Image 1 (cartoon, rainbow, N blue to C red):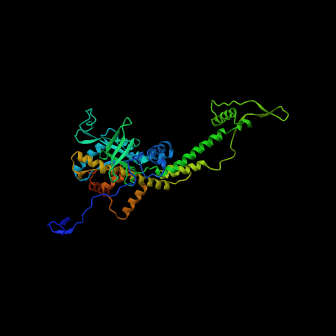
Image 2 (image 1 turned 90 degrees about the horizontal axis):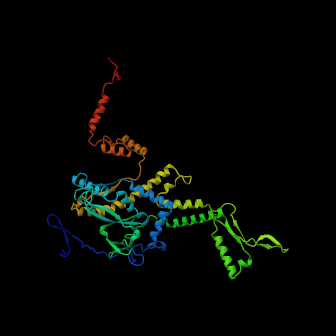
Image 3 (image 1 turned 45 degrees about the vertical axis):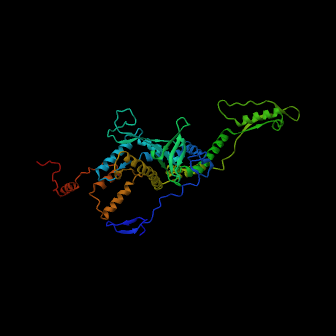
Length: 480
């Protein structure tokens, strides 16, 4: 055997096979474009639309989020669904009391002991939806007790553990650049200081980077609104055109009549009069201050006497008939496309005169699948990067690291579930007595769980005794 190569041996020291040499180097990178350099450092370098490159993308996605009803409603329903879901910390081993104790302490840190609530923290994390990513700084504290004024030690608990003071959002608009290693992996988040000029560099180990999904291994993620951008632009243009059309239909199109020597004249007087009239026509609106002054001069007739035709005149030309394009239907089509891209198309059911219960159920099921995906992105990041750091800070064994988990996002059809349980029973499946199964079914139905220490044998025996008992001839107790 080549002594330069490592050898795998058995428990007796005998060589089993020759191990191949391992290559631990990384040669490639995530991008051929220099990351974190240039005038728009810290943003996607591979975006092919100029209006979505650099800092303009933050402005555009913020406008879509805050200024469009379909987008805003969709993001709101996604956010409230995720923040209102069940979030819990599961132990590494349910049968190990130490693991359960650590899980309970971590649940306290996350849900009961931060300076901001878990719901508010989660809302900030979910800013990754419109922007593609969000970054929070991990701020720690020593859990000394509630009586200290020092924020680094103030806590609702007095166990002395190192816990979470807060997971502080670092807004997307404050990003100056990402710092990367030689292979394109993020090393630090660099943001503007509070005075707008200083730079604050936060190492990646001191923060959590959340992304809607990975693309090219970069920290930018992919905005949930990116696929709807083109449709949003078309909808925005349609709304602008419609509002202009409504304004023109209600007020009419201003038409001015001027003498030919003024309209086609090039003298200073003609140009000044013409410019004043054009400005007045463009700015013409009906409101409480609307007014227009016109010369009263009349054109002379064939006999040289004044006619009934004014030299200067103005009127409002209105459109006749109906529009050839149904702008309402056009906008609804765009709105439906945007909602579909966000998996919230079920919100539009009934508004367009169509939609069934079965279709709503199917669309809600797809929406629930999407929510599970987003929630899993959050739990995976916390479980991989936050909890192991807390375990290390407190000197706890890594194998007992708990995990953040989420509940379901789809309300079960109780009638279908009952049919399923009945079918299992009819097929001979031994379902009951089973307290765990019974409590799971009770929870789905909103019923109170039974005590875990209930003795099913005693319950069944009591039932059997009731069945075997002699019937009472005098149930009302009237026998003398």
